[in-house]
Image (cartoon, rainbow, N blue to C red; front, side, top):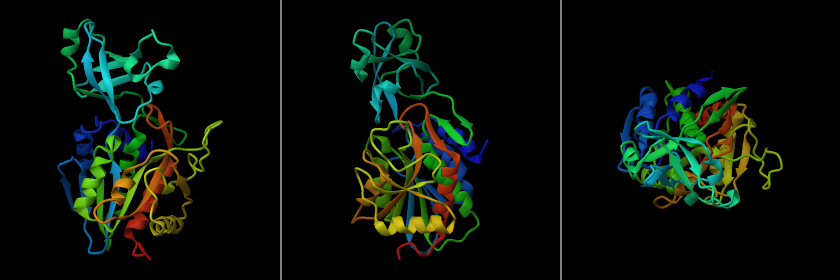
Length: 336
């Protein structure tokens, strides 16, 4: 298996829905510790790793939280109603397994009374095999969070499993740090693993406010346009190289930063794709709006089936993203 898979299995397997990122933060801090000068955690739970330099402040952000569910009610038979944490599509949830922080596992199922096409989140419940409300309450409390529980695997140069969004962005930054190891960068580098992105980009703004970067780069996943009969055309393909974001629904990236990222890729002999995402957004938007404004860019990992338990991306896209970002971080041409 690849180094990318090994890192993703470790980081991706840590429990970490939005607002409950502690285990993920600990795993990332352990992996990053040998490559940075200091590590801090702020009040929102962002992990901020600094590789000191005297030049421009460059901030690289990847959110470490994931989507999930939270228990809201337990009925008399022990079935658990829930609310979503982040953006979920009910069609992706039927008969999937979930895991609570204490290790309790369950299956999401649905009421059969409404027609399947008319199902909403209100018709879904979690079955943990309890026989009563009291039985269930011994395992799960109201307010307990749960995450997808599914197999992670690597096959034919592709990773598949839950929470590539955005643990694979975290892995990209860790690979980037490893490549920068032993190098003396003139830039002052901040690697921020942000909290609560999936529920409103909350961590990124706080971290950028504290760091006050000259340039900020978000690393996240993006959709692809290479599936059969896709309704919305998109010029991004799995395995076609990392994508440099031009814009999405929440941000228009700084042209000079996009150009610098593309030059860094060219210096590494890496072909990149240009991303225009017609829906959704990432930490990039919040980074841009911090303080008096920040020049921003984003590098995205093309990923299929985002926000499902079976997300899929190419190992080569991750490796190349880390390489071009390391080149960008070490360069003096940042804002020519």
